[in-house]
Image 1 (cartoon, rainbow, N blue to C red):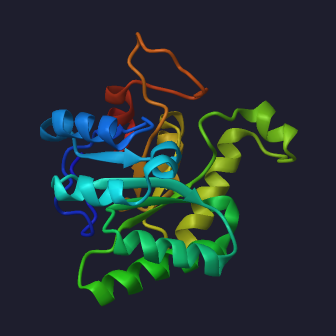
Image 2: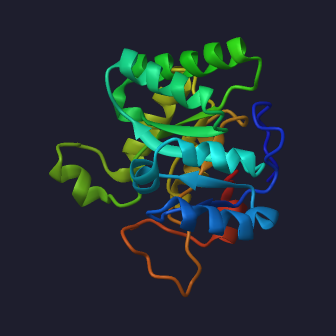
Image 3: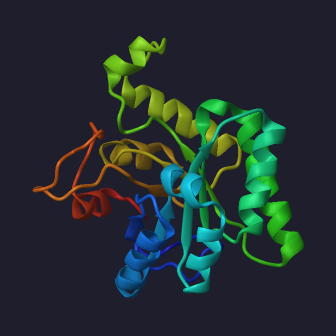
Length: 219
């Protein structure tokens, strides 16, 4: 499960740890303890909103790869500027919502590539979030989608690939179907992983980490 993308040569361990804590101190304490045994750290909305972009700089100073999981979703120009800013922060992975549309996804990927080229560094992996793992078919129907989860994920994935994205975020349960229709080089990142003794929390479509990797997840 080593990374196949040239943009992240240092990331070979497939386990990414979510730093879902409210303070920089707690995040850095976890990072220092776990850095030797994981591939990188995910900075999400809670931590980023609480302490700002400096947490990314501090994690990078430790030598850790950073997955910025803010799921940008806005007009193409706004998302492009946010992706450019994330690239300047030197994150290795970041997320956008595929539901923002093809033009938005194209703008995000182009911004990552162009900004990285100007900085003479590898472009971050821009990941399209398909359907949140907190949603099931009933929840999709409630907000107006007329497809079940599997169909919506595949539609979003195919659109993302046409837009030029090199990776996707999906439930581990959807990996086998996606691997049948996507180019082999597409990276798949799977939230919603739990050991058998963990609570599912908000996630409704989960597997264990070992099962997710066996199904074809990269991260």
